[in-house]
Structures are given as C-alpha cells and as structure tokens.
Amino acid sequence: MLYQYTQTQLSLFEGIYYVVVPKDHPLRQMLELCDFSKIYDELKDKYCPDNGAGAISPVLLFKYLILKAMYHLSDVDVVERSKYDMSFKMFLGYRPEDEVIHPSTLSKFRTQRLKDVNILDLLLNESVNIAKANGIIKDEVDTIIDSMHIGARHNQKTPEMIIAELARNVRRSVYNSGDAEKWKKRFPAKADKKGLDALIQYCYQLIDIIKNDESLKFQAKVHENLNLLAEVLAEAEQPETEEHTYLTPMDPDASIGYKSAYNPFYGYKDHYLLTLNRIIIAAVFTAGHINDGGQLPLLVKKAQNNGLSIHSVIGDMAYASKQNLEFTDAEGIKLVGKLNPVISAAMLNQERDGFTYNKDARRFICPRGRMSEKGTESASKNNDSRRRSYRFDASGCVGCPLDGKCHKPGTKSRVYTVVIPSELNQKQQAFQESDEFKELMNHRYKIEAKNSELKYRYGLNKAESTRLIAMSLQGATAMFVANMKRIMTLIAQKEK
Image (cartoon, rainbow, N blue to C red):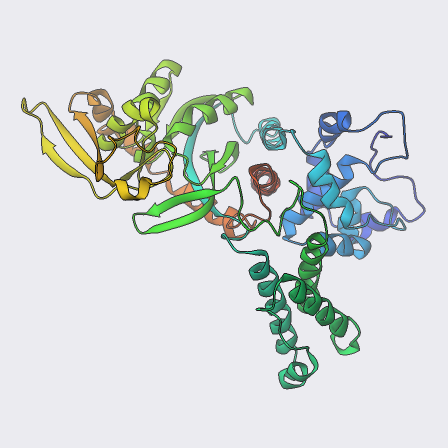
C-alpha cells in the first residue's frame, strides 16, 4: 500500500535543521527549488493503492539515489551517512530522531520499481522548468551537441575477476592503514585461482577478520571498500535473474565503439544537448557502437517536448550529415557543424544497408560492429564527384548472420564505396564562412568541459551496473544533480 509522501513531519527537534544546515547548502537549496511530487505521480502506478503493508515512499528512495550521484557513495554508505548527517536527513524528509531505511531497499527499488519508467526525461524536464522559472534559459535557445563514451561496468570481466579485484582493493586499503606485514600474516591465503566458490569463501574470511579488529573500526576507506565487496558477495548468492548487476560477466546491452582507429572501448554513449550557459536540456543513452549524428533529430524533439525552441545546434563534423541538414532546414534550425564529405555521403547509404561512419576512427563500421581498413580515394570519370572505398576482410565474417548477404560468397574481401558529390553541401559551406557560424562555433568548448564534469565529478566515466536501463538511471540522476548545481550557481550570480 502506498501513502502520499510529505516532507518533514512535525518534531520537537525540527529546529535543529535550520540551525546546523545553512541556507546556501546545496541540498537545502534543491529542496526549495524542486517539486519532487512528480516522482510520486510517475511511480504510484507501480504500487498497490489499497492492499498490503505500507510501502516506503518512492520519493524518499529516489532522493537517496540523488544523494548517491551527488556524493558518489555506495548504497551502504549513503544510508549510513543519512543516520547522522542533518543535511541528508533534511533533504530526505526525515525527522532528526527517525530511523533510516535498510540499504537493500535501494537495490529493490531500482530493479523492481523503476522498470519502464522514463526517469531521464522526467528529471531533465523538471530542471529545465526550474531554469525557465528563474530566468536562466529562455524559450528559444542556442545549443551544443556531443556524445560521451562511458565504460561498461565490468569491461568483459568474469565474476571471479570482479570479486578478486574488489578483494584486492580491500587488502590494499588495510595495508595502507599501517603495519602491512602484520596484516599479510593474518589474512588467509589468496584464492584467486581456485574457482568462484573458493574465492567467495576467502572473501568472507577476509571480511570477518577486518570487522572483528578494533584498530580498523574508524578507517573509512577500508570500510568503503569492504561495503562494495559485501554488496557483490550478497549478489553472488542470489539465483540468476535479469536483475543481476555486478556479476554479469558481459553486459548484454553494451558494445564496442571506437574513440579512434586504434582505441576501442566497451560500453555506452551518452548523447545530449547543452545550452550555452551549460544546462543539459535533452539526453539519450545508447550502446557504444551507435552513430553520433543519427541522434540529433531525437534530441531536438526531446528539447521541444520540454517546451524549448531550438535556434541553433553546434556540433562537430559527425552531425553535418545530409539527413541532419535536411531535418534542421525543415525545422528552421541552424546547424553549426563543419562539413565532412565522407560523413555526408555515408549517411545516404546508412538506412539502406546499415553501414555507419565512425568520425573518430575515420573508417566504416559494418552492421555487426566490425571496422574497415583505411579508405582509399579516387576521382569519378566526369570529375564532378569523388569516390572513397573501404575494404573489409571477409575472413572475419565467419559465423555472422549476414555472411554471404552483404558480400558475395567465396570472396576474400568486401569493398564498401561511397560517392561524394561536390554540390551536396554548397549551402552549408557558404554558412560556414559567415561570422555568425564562427561566433557560435566558439562556444563548442563548453560541452567538452561538461563531459569532463559528468565523468569525473559525477561518475559517468564508468557504468555502475549492467544493462541500458540501469545506465539511463545512473545518467539521469547525475545529469539532474549537475543541472541543479549549475542552476543554483547562476541564481547566486544573478542575486549579487
């Protein structure tokens, strides 16, 4: 049974919050700016309205997820801190004397209540509305578009490798606390190469030794690593289900993408639109091999659904394709992106046969994710256009469902050729030479700084779990926190 969520209940000790939590504290400011009742409205259908025991409020649990993103804490540590941190208790809606939830409740909430819920768009819409209400962004905006690489949670590691690495982190943090030789003698013999069951048994022995030692009771780093290991061990004892997170040896939704021709990564991509004053207004998460340019129409539509009119979109060469030029022209949007003739020609064939161009590697990717060799260019007979050919080694196609379909059976290679007409992009080329184009392009550096902020301040350099739905949830909370902190900074600047 689900009850309506209310903020702080009456308490004799309620005044403590207004003494120890200053007015300019980020969590107190966020409470004043945000309407979290929308979370309740979005999730209430996931609960039975009139049967069963009273459920913990989804708003309370979602606020815990925001705190996790904001302070980069594990489930155990964010709940532990909410016991004594008055800013946390005030934000969560607890009374000072209230007991807090059990950490396992957060895992159940993520896996059972947030399925099929578009939290990403909901949170970005809320932050955009707050920014508009405070005069930070207008109804018509200039935007910057880019994608960001996010590593998968396990980098194709086996469960044994995952647990062994976490156990190693625990040992190192204990050694760093002092008298490493003493601890090496006390710890049991390592079981990294004796199988999963033996490794799990070793980890439980390790945990017992550390928890029963008084000298490590106040070593925060040791207990942070210990909590992470304990979470993974608890999951290892659960039956195999789709909700498994840490111990999935290979993420079924992640894929291999390319940062450059010789620098692949395994994971996801975050595609998003950013205003010139650095507010994220639309985002979508995809597998790592997905083409960047094809996400522009979707992101523009998401921003328009948030009540914004897009004046211009600033991006790199990946976004200056024929389809995007036609889309932005039809929408009355200025596409500020330098032309790459290979990309423009490649996008003509993308919907026909599934081959896509990777701007970073400067090569083509086949529908199954394999990369071509370096392209060779030649002139057409009439000299009005050029051709560029990319060769795929057919020996790597063995076992592929498309083997024999995208190339002739028995051939040793498959050549993919694109034609680059010189007149396709004349209008865009003229716009590239204008002062307006150059002035807008000078703002593109801002999204590179935002990429760094999201990666290293809010943890989007690596997925915390497996599957695309979990990646979207992690990104949603991180982007919402980034937006709110930026909005609070801009409000403070206006008030000076």
